[in-house]
Image (cartoon, rainbow, N blue to C red):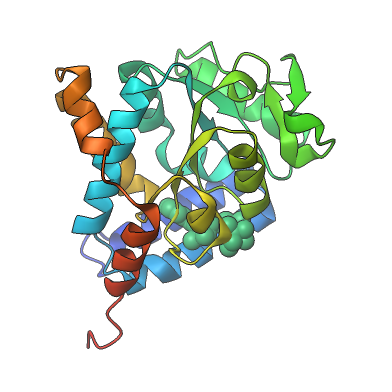
Length: 246
Ligand code: ATP
């Protein structure tokens, strides 16, 4: 039991969720290492949503609402940390949810599918029963996608993706929104929009923003998207890492 007044309470709660997901068998050991990398960048960013990431969140939500077939890609880390919020966001946009695992095993996919089913969400894609195709005919596990989901999607939200997969998605003509605490990762640089923030803060803020933006007309959403440059936004995110903060 972690005492609520512990100075690192939030961080320890997230670690617990990650450890439990590993014990439950749906998060790989590498998923725990990925979490550690994220923690480091979160520490350097001051563990808060920066003004720079708020801009990326607004642009992302406007894009998601305007997209034809938006899909939210989920893996072990995202399920462990933010599945309730992801389901809420998917229903609000509306967007589909697809399981995509770096270390895909039938067992892990089934556990995640059952977690979603227990929460009343039955339409999850990317399951073992789904019709999986290879994007751009690249016969690699990194290129698989559901025919009705990512494969035919115009916009994919990928919290915690790896660089190779992001590159395949972008090269196939899709727009990619990444949520990644590391502004220097290959994913962050390859994505069309990168939200440099912890998914545990980013997704709730995306829900709040979507509730507001759903009332906007198309032209107003297009105005929000218009001048966004991912490269510039990433440079601003890097400036938020204040190494003199002592
Ligand atoms: P790339 O191939 O894009 O360079 P990588 O090899 O550095 O990625 P991975 O281990 O594939 O990294 O993915 C983990 C990424 O997810 C890291 O960049 C890490 O900062 C980020 N990350 C981990 N936890 C979170 C979190 N809770 N919220 C947002 N991002 C996170």
